[in-house]
Image (cartoon, rainbow, N blue to C red):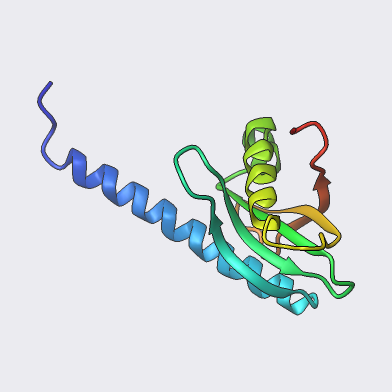
Amino acid sequence: MPSIPGQQEAVRSSKSSTKQRGDAAEDRTLAFLQRAGLTVVARNFKTPGRGGGEIDLIMRDRDATLVFVEVRLRASDQYGGAAASVGWAKRRRLVWAARHFLARFEHLPACRFDVLTWDGDAREPVWLQAAFDAQGFD
């Protein structure tokens, strides 16, 4: 099927602007967490191979807990908003990536999975601490 002139450029522009908004939300989240006293350990940690996972931010809390952070951005809270977009499959990929990251540790630190969501024009994220755990993802 022939493409419509300008169609590919519009798709690329849409994807890049979505990526830019996501990167900006990640930057704002990092600053928010640092103001809350967390320190950055890694950013955009990716597992090797296809079908792996990516962890947006890995932070260390004041009590030395390692925090795996998922940042979600949605234009509106329609359909459950950003928090509802962290479904079972996404949690499974995050847990798998976290286990891959933790494989380098001789002694496992305390860990948790946090989700920070940005819905609409929110000035601050909603911070869901310990949003889920690794149980059931073996």
